Length: 303
Image (cartoon, rainbow, N blue to C red; front, side, top):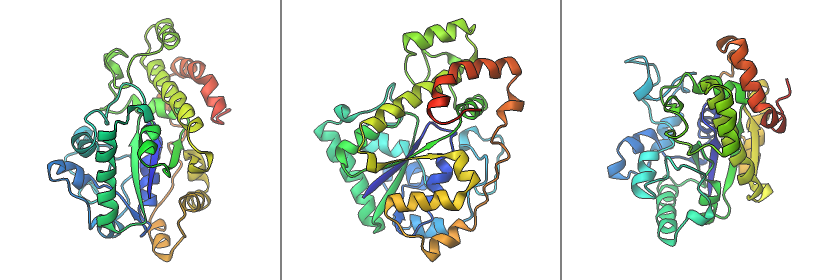
């Protein structure tokens, strides 16, 4: 069976993916597999190697955008979004579509490639469940068209925190403007909103989150309710054991002694939960909150 952990990026979905991958029944595509994408490795030893390693240090970003040459935890076999692999062996545009990928985008040819890609890894890793990680547009309609039983764990984080984090990431390409970034063109109403903010970059990042969350709302509505689980990052930090148990139950996995050992290696500090209060100026934060008022309410962020 295939499941995906999805999110907007900088939302806590990496933590969720890595936590779930501590379970002995879970397989995944690793960063090593992705770096060697021409070889199309199927990751036979991914799980055993990963489950012996320490958790990913908090705040680690991609090697390309890291400010340090050497970092603890950088060299390891760990879950990856594997966009190089998917672009090479499934669909060239999978990694950076200008809108969400839906069932209508899956041709019979690509469906065969998609099934071959994940089925080979499920078979080679001998796992009852392979959990993959996707950020940006959800792409769940596209994946479910090939895997009707697809389970989705959607990780949601306060849009103000995501906005603040995007602005600090080397990969965020909003500095080039919405005509050149990876999310595709702004809808007319959001374009107007950005222009009225004097083309504020914090507002543009907020509108990007708003666009994506509208995409997740549409994707959830098109998905069988029993196959979709929303997990708020803030709830995971507040009660990690309860939220982890809820995710395992949703995926049909037991809380095994092996998973307990892996879970026990994690810390869940809430220190940067509201860092946006200090790292955005008062006027910037007010503009971001105006832009996000509706989706923040919709997703349960009321303060």
